[in-house]
Image (cartoon, rainbow, N blue to C red; front, side):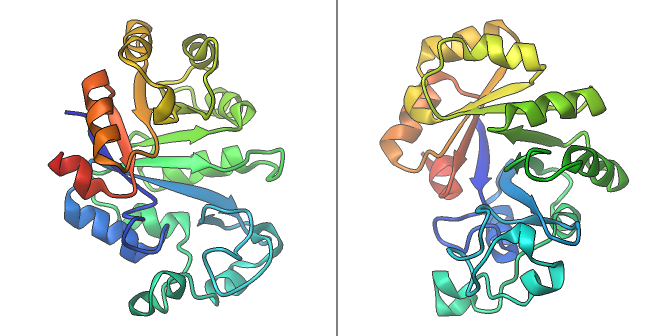
Length: 236
């Protein structure tokens, strides 16, 4: 049975990357939660997917151009439904502390030092301070950030995110020093998983919401399924 990983919490039914969404994922009984991290103007690590706040809050502008106080003044829930009004953008520290110890943290770094100089070190420092380094896996499409993270903390599990059908994803992930590959599910076959496993790599696929796709990924032998509807993965 693959790990059930709630995408941005339980984003199919709740406002993504908010505490109410993560709490719903915990109630469902997920093995892990996937979420996204940016940094505010005044240096706080926050949990939000987009570089701008426009889609998921009642505000406008770039996260990197806002202070934490400005960001936290925004409503991050009402867009999903009036019952979620008043939800705020969480800080990474807040989410780490609220996550049960048996739930793994799948942290997606949206951008490394190319946009947030020094963020890799800040992430490692925070996770160590919270005693969460061992139960966290950091993934990113910014593969240079993954290389930097491996230099800073060789023991930190890493996941290489991919969205296209790479010629040699296994070789790329091994060169970086990753624990896992996180491919878009559409490209994953039993042969893909077998090649990754032969190299000692796990395969955690995203974002798998439809029952047919969930069945296909289970049959392919993946290690984790990232889904907006984790309850579907558990019941499939």
